[in-house]
Image (cartoon, one colour):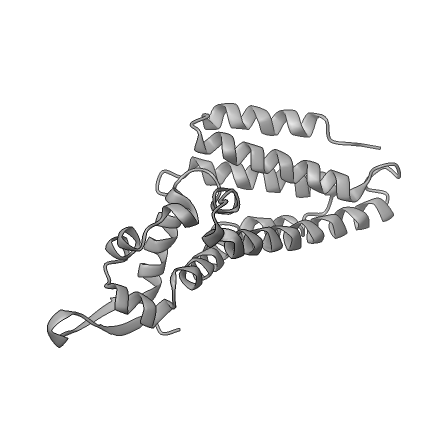
Length: 204
């Protein structure tokens, strides 16, 4: 997608806007409001474009959200992919937990998790979005399970450890931490949660 696009505005005068900047603005609205809570009026105002320009450049609201979710994963969740390359399972977990914690320290981004906020949506309009978020989460979980299976096979994790259960436990801790962050729990207290989670990490 080109970074600069031309869209029509009232009276036939062209208006140029930066598509990536506008998408970043949409991401922030979705992150704050969730998919259902973000109205087209709020989105277009934040993006600085008209509805026709939104439809022409990004498609409908659902398509815009998917593009915003892609941007969120690329920019905000990059630490997750990097964490899988850590040399030990414990370091994988530490990097994931601390990566999630560092996101909450940001003063420029909303707190909480875009995926958690939007997957909790329950209206008929949001069913496909909920399914999309769940599918992406399942893909990330599958990669983590595979990494922990390798760790067990290599003797890095005890033989009795269930890689799937361990991955889901870690995911539950991270999701719970992000939900608490969105409700106002301090980073200091979230840091204690990370420390506690690592205290019970299985070792040989």
